[in-house]
Length: 291
Length: 276
View 1: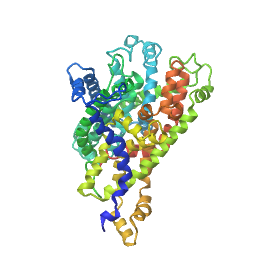
View 2: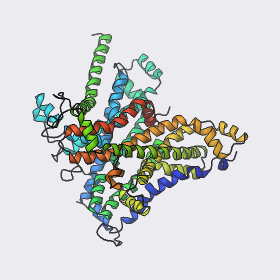
View 3: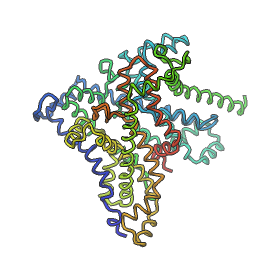
View 4: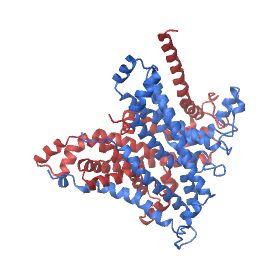
């Protein structure tokens, strides 16, 4: 059977065109525009060399802080989502009544629009009339009440906490699927050998979950580096750019007409993601074999 | 305390902890639902106290003031057509890539799947949208959503196609099938479950998406629900009863879809994570 004839290449044409035109080409020409002074205020384009990149990477630049914020957001939310997700996955595996109801509840936030989650928490975290501070006061913990989203020292933590609230259920669900796939015979053998719960977790569950954990971490990292909605809805980068990440910064520059700066930051992110993306995709597509 | 006693204590502790965690998710949702029935005055701080007077008309007010009927239809249009286009084209691509594993095709597959990772450069995408005259058009948004969802959909369906035995193709070819009829009459029907999973996820993600219309749709009549609610929030910042009603109406379709198609959503989103 001739593969070229019966599996014609043009079956993939629509996907290739749409994806190339709207995802890849903007990324590539964006790199080109990074070397110009493109802006809303001038019709002419001039080549400016590495000037924009120099601006981004110079020691005390604002832009560098946005990049660092993005990385911090990614690392912190990924760590908490994975850690808590693993804890809940193990917790909701045995000995809990209405297990599926619990799982369903925890998964719920990840199907809601991220923007809506952000808007909702902007009310809950409001210092004056928000639910959280009112609740803390009512149980006598009023001293813990904070200006969650406007205090520069706390705002970023609050934003990340809301994102962990939103994303943990999804990670938990993936890990549960991974735990369910582990053959119970391992645990039986281990308990005959006298292994306690912790030892079983450490020597069976964790190693068997390696691939699943790798995938969830990759997905978390991809999400974290592209985060926008949650920050836009909660703080829009404020107070004083304390919670600004790359995508919110790009949006703000775009609305100010600073196209060259916007595309430069996007391009830095694009090149970085293509390089690490190759390895991430390798992890995601690992073990795929024809059956 | 014996081992049995210890286990019971552990289980009680587990159940309490499970409910405590569930409350963290349920309380914000309860706040939204309760607040959506309150009067303007009562709704300033969201709280768990029940409304003194149930205002059901909040929902009507929001639908009128927020022009939700139009944005609901827009969202339906964008999510619906983007899903049809993506699932149709991505399934065909996944089929070809799964059957042909030569070096060239593997590289092309890698190229497409890399789209799950690479970020969109919105600034230069604006240039593309202007050049193709797709900026601020409904077709433009549908194509953008198709481009966003294509990589993951191909990745998801690829796994399913691999499980359709090649012998089936061979038998069909011996019976005289052309490439088109081999795909549409033999393979396509077998991929229906995969397409439902891919379709539900695509619809969900597209319904919830917010950045593309924020950048590329200026006219309010073309806004989907996510953008409409953001705008509504800006206008009625203090009327949390109305905002909450809007939140419920915006989330209702995805929540209903989640309840009906939970199996497909969870199955699809966890596919690829577990390989036994």
